Length: 449
Image 1 (cartoon, rainbow, N blue to C red):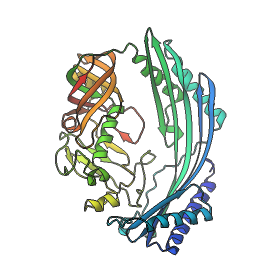
Image 2: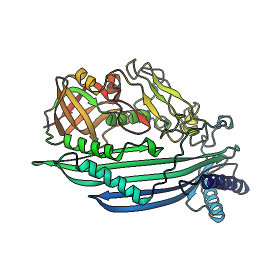
Image 3: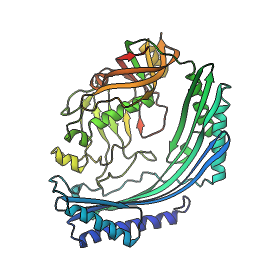
Image 4: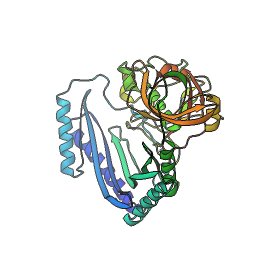
């Protein structure tokens, strides 16, 4: 698929729609009582350079097809990257064979027909970038040069990369639902290494967007990568203590992901969530509002329907600090005797409302404590909410950054951390579908030297 020919895009969309219709017809012919299918076609370009030299030039072109069939409540699935009629028939046969050998699952089946997305909003997700390899190389080189020129202490580079991808996604099921849409995603990133004496540090920056015009410039990405790297030089350990902790927007986004994982249907019906049975109870202070906005135009997380074909909709997950809903697909909703929330495949454009304080204001509010800019490891217990992660960042006294720190561990419990949220900043400074400023947590345990 080219990224510049709208006729080609329309033809490929029509072709994928025909393929999934044929697939559903074949499933019915082979005796399935219901079926669903998702097909995709993607093409892209990725360039990477290091120290001014080209390392990779990669053109990609991928197809994918997934089929799930139901014989009553027995289910079978298969997939293929071959979209030929013969391969489609073989994929259906494989799924049917699997279904014939599985146990019936009382909760299996399509989402209800009346929940299918009917009036699909135009979300402005398709912005092809006619980027030739030579131009992509120039962008990557300019980005890396900006990072290396930021400070003489930057002594090496892990490289810079430019990527552009265009794709089409189509979903269909036996309710007669067939819908699809094209989308694009472009990105630019850079990582460099700095050294001062015995201290050597690495950091990075990146930008990503649906439209190339919305990307940060190559020079800005490089500058921020250099700035972040140099700021970490001279990092040291600090002693064990209990202190307030300010999570940068990047690390705070990880806390939001822990939250959404805890209210996802699969975690709940498996009873492996620290937020089990907490609907309509307070889990954050009353100033907190967390909401999903799936129909934002041109945004990375936007989608008109979920992985079940159910219409997506804007909703509050938390308002006035109270948990208002879980995140459910059709299957988990049946397991929990609830209704799907249109979240098969995850959450779309998650936002937490910012407060009035910027980064400097949050540091002053904290006074003395730890400003976390990087987290390491996966020390989160989803059942209890116990939280322990390796961390790096900056030590703060008198509301001012004093020096960088590394090789420390921060620990707490997510239930207590959420309730101990003092403020959310208005300093969101990174791309992505999760939008949050810094989080100031009242107190956590810091383990150092």
